[in-house]
Length: 302
Image (cartoon, rainbow, N blue to C red; front, side, top):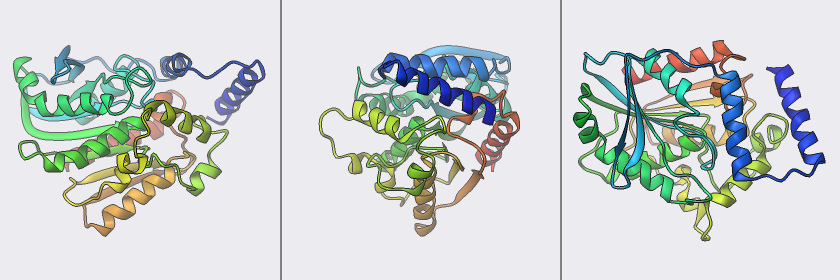
């Protein structure tokens, strides 16, 4: 990991020296290229299908390792700063989660900023959640009524936000919430991890701010939109996974503190030597990634 990170930092420095500008397409290409190179292909599935769900006909990819048996459902929201990532990019990650968890994974291809700023992607994901079961029934999926919601990074922000919003939705209940190095505070206060890990560890503080500026385009109240400040009462049991070298580490810890204060059942996995987006680097850090998948599996089935 250290050797690759040094190479990545040199490449980023050279790009800055050449005056190459940041752009949404560059962010998308970079995440896709990194994941393709270092994440592998993931295991084969016994059954998979692309469907649409919700009022926006949002694309959803289904992964079912055991289609003949009822199983829990895990809705997965990919990372990428609300700007990058897709179901196609995250395909190996979703395959591994479905195989490890013996669950039906429903990966949501929500719309991305800046073309579709806040709250469009959030609206897509909410629509999918509310209408997912009818879409699964139409696709012939066998489920057992247990529903988890998971996401990493920006997808973790969406998942945590949706969990808060769904507290007011009487007909849909989340059984588990799983957040992997999540983004939880759009205000970017002076967390120590933003300073300690804000440069040189793949995701940089300046890039986080850039992502958020493309996501919030109409002067929205970023604090009000942050899941960290939405209150904790009524949330489902929650797993938070943090990485020691991630700039988002401390907002994950702040979220855990609030879960404790509000007596929400929780579990915390901390990986002190890992960087942000390590799931996308499976072939570099396979043991850490397998530990994440196993922890998610155990938590979903607890």
